[in-house]
Length: 467
Length: 90
Image (cartoon, rainbow over all chains, first blue to last red):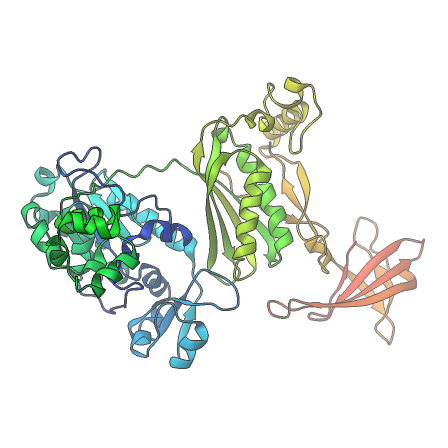
């Protein structure tokens, strides 16, 4: 296994509780992740669905490494990746080893970082690229085991139950997974992969943090308790304030925590105290659950010229929602989560992912949610391409028929006039006939792009019309 | 799977041949289109304005003239100050 040519400093300190709670944090950063380590607990005797034996593969500074694969000339320089949040006061998300040596740390303001390291190269994040690579990684690892669960960018859990006869002993299984990554991805990306093998995701993650590049840490069933006992309590997936309080009381390792009576912990911390004890003693095992993600509905729009203003983005968003909602695959389902990706001028990308409190199929509701996200954290540059993905779906909405363009919906059903975006059947038939004859729809819609632009050709555009 | 739809810009400028006076103002224009290759004299310049934009990207610098050509047709012309060419645009 080749050693990592450039060692990078992890964005989050290993063993921090924050690092373990990657679910919500990853959602914020745009990574598709529906799991939080430590929250899907089950009894050690009955793990239910999923795999009890877990292999955690962790690629520290995954995003920065992807950038260095793209710009290898930066590999030996001081590099920092900016956080995805736009605005004036940008912060550092990840740093290379050289930058770390110069004093640059994740979370610092750009101004602080540059004053510490004047030669620092700042890279704009490209979340769409990171997510695409993460997805490719999940697909590649699914060739090894059907139970693959992502936990944020650069971290994946594999369910290894029942794979002994196929791949051999746990060490062989771990090495095989690492070799598989090397076969599929460039070495600079995966060279620093840490692997941890243990019962449950929590144990596997703690083991992965202790592992070195190409040197997996394996924890057998009977060794889990003693292994966890040596680990600091900051690794526990509990509230940071609780960890801080325990440390002030002189409880620094999980072993020390395990020696405390359960009643005392419950008295001090409530249910969280009981949970912490269960994790610390290895009494709670969280199985790896197969990750199911419905195939997203994806629509995109290329701008003739990069767009830096909000209004044309809103217009394009409306067009995209209209098209996505009219897709046959969406019919009969409401939208529970959606993602907007903007490919920026000069490289880089921006994403906003939103899970709806209540699934909806109404364009205005969905547009409002995404517009709010754009207002809160606008793209850091002009947008060349806008992509909308409907990623999760809910039950059919009672409003659904209003958006249906079939004969039962709209005018024929209710006797009312055409709703916005509705297409008369006669026009649909005409387009179908033209497409049969010409091979494409020769009809176009005039859409507003940037109606107040000083440059006349930027104001309106033609969008192919294919209902 | 067809290629993703691309917004096609409307009202894109078209290159034209223009004769100018000593001050650089248009005096005749050969409008594009069949049978319209001959120069048509400019009867009057109604308005002129300049646009400078996107200096941070690919600079746009145009000097527009809203003119009336022989026959009474209104035409909007501009001289691209970056490449020196003349264009017609609605």
